[in-house]
Length: 66
Image 1 (tube, rainbow, N blue to C red):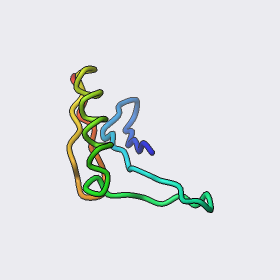
Image 2 (cartoon, one colour):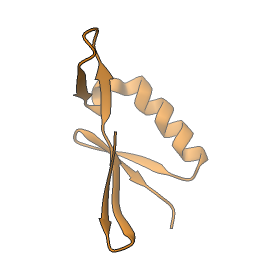
Image 3 (spheres, rainbow, N blue to C red):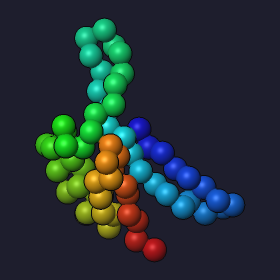
């Protein structure tokens, strides 16, 4: 799930939270530390596009090139 903070026409913060669904189709948040394989995959894919993912407690902050 992506979260954006916007001021005027400018994105000031871009981050994501990892989510999973259980067998009852309930959605719950996961910490990046609990999803190491997924974070490694996303980090590698993002790097190819010039973005850097930084773990920030329960979120991944997306650092985009200017």
